[in-house]
Amino acid sequence: METKTLIDLIQIVSGIVTILGLPLALVLFFNEKRKERKEREYGTYNALDDKYIRFLELCLEKPELDVIEYPINTDVKLKDRQEQILFLILISNLERAFLMYHDQSNKIKESQWLGWVAYMKDYAKKDNFRKKWPELGTQFDKQFVEFMDSLMNDKN
Image: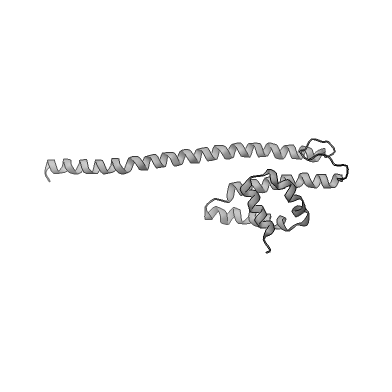
């Protein structure tokens, strides 16, 4: 092979690598940055949710205090207030599972998500949960609320 032909071939290959490689590198770079941002956002959400659940646990320890966002109603029994606080903790955990697993790969869905959906369906059938859901569910993630509403409306 002649030197000129070899140089021309190297230039063609170099051009192809530049044309294809640079956009591919940019796509990979931006995908990685998006993934890092999503992980940071979830980490922030997770830390705040842990603190919210800890606050609810404190409210559960002292249900007679008027510190939770739902005011003390003289007609509400202490047991009902405690049930409400426990449902807030439960819903917060269900929301966290929804946000972590609902859009993951099939492998993760098979091992985690399906179990969480079954758990959510069980609570969606409970009369006391169904009664409290319209009041308590409004403060949570919109997509999660829509998902839970669909489970509540599911006849199966």
